[in-house]
Image (cartoon, rainbow, N blue to C red; front, side, top):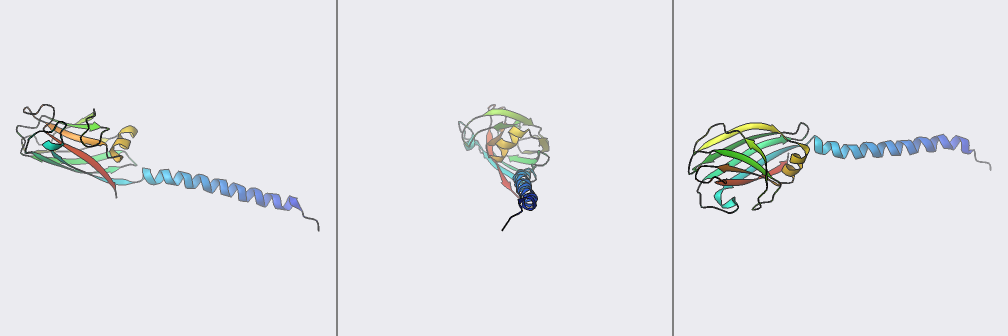
Length: 160
């Protein structure tokens, strides 16, 4: 029996190309899933989280969302019982809880005071996104009493 390989080659070529193309699309799809993801961010702050820790009785809470498609992080931070009016609100990283890191960016204080808030949005760089999604970002609120930071909160990001 004689086999005609000429007729079988186009089929093999088409199947091979289909396999290659589907592999490329599947590989790209994994990246797109991360890029299309949204996250909920949170972080409670206290003086005991500062490094070194302090005896402040102030507390803070952060809530927000991060959109990996646009790199926009929207946040709301509230604090109470600071020893003096909030002077600086800053974000640091990369660092795990209890470890100090470099300043990434400041945040504007919306309502200053011993109890106050900050609300806004920041467009993160790709490097800052990695730090945020790795839960290696934290915020501090400084006052005249605690110029290096009165309270600190580690920021966590959870996929929605």
